[in-house]
Structures are given as C-alpha cells and as structure tokens.
Image (cartoon, rainbow over all chains, first blue to last red):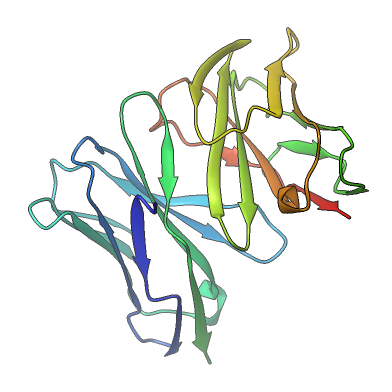
Length: 111
Length: 114
C-alpha cells in the first residue's frame, strides 16, 4: 500500500514554465515532508522540506505548498530551467525516523 | 560528489547467493541510512544506524541485515537472493540522528540477480 501518492508520473514544460508536482498522504502521524531531486546515475538529493505547522516554504526557485486539512502538499518550480530536468520524489516521515516515498515524477524542461 | 562512498558500483550474482554492500559515510557523519530503489517498488527506506546502533527500521526483509562498525562504515548483507532483489541500493549519511538532518546519498550499488 502506497503511503504517499505522487502525481503526475511525468511532466514536460517549456523553459520558464512552472511545473507543479502533487503528493497526498493519509497517515496524520506524518510530520516531516521532504522533496528530493535525482539526476540519472546519481543518488537523490534533498531539495526542500516542510513541517505541517507552515503552509508554504520557499527556497530559491522551489516552493512547497502544504494543505494540512486536505493532507496534500506540492512542489512548484518557478522559472524552470533545462537543468531542472530530473526525477523528483516527495516523501513523508513520522516519529521513529521511517520515511515513505512517492513514486517519483520525471520532469523534462524544454529549452 | 556527496562524500558518501559505496562499493561496489555494480554487482551481478545468481539467485540464492549472498552479497555484501559497503558504505563509507561522509567524514563526521554518525548516521547511515540504507534505501532500495527498484522499478516496481520505487524508493524504499530500509534501515538507519546511528553511531553503531540501529535507530529505525523500514521495509527491510528478514533475508537482509545491516550493521555499522566502530569506524562508522556500514554494510548491508543480502542473502538467499531472488530475482526481485535486483535494484539500486543507496546509502546515505547525516551528522545527526534526527530525520530532518539533511542526509547525503551515495551513487548507489546496482545489484542484478540472474
């Protein structure tokens, strides 16, 4: 059973566009929500993370929006660049340090 | 380069065999995490060690075991291998034990079971 549901599976946008990746969860015990970026042949790298006490967090061109009541969170990439082309994973964690990952979104930014 | 070293990079072995994957964490990092990434299961957290002690357990099969040694390197042992164990296995390390301490991933070991 997938604890974190991620969509879409793949996404193609033009340079400068704003891709949005969505994730949803059911377990209200989750209290830490990171996003990871993975390039081909590399391990994932932490991009940005949020806790449910805030509704939005920005780091550079990356923004997480969090809706606690809907149990949904999303990643927005402002002014997307070809170098942002990668696979993005959302995740959720609860006390006890276990992490549950979404299935990943393959993003392609066309020049 | 994340500073996390995993060996070997590639491993091909037969069903029923046992293999050991090795991870050297970044200098100063006390936590080591193991993950499995496969096409059908996606990215799954397996286990975390902190300063030699097991701290968290995820979807790790009984056929799999791990440990962290006094020099902080870690090994993941996979036994009675099945075709479905073919995957990328990542190790990550972080300074602290808390889950919101950034963990840095190695480049992974690609295991192919034939």
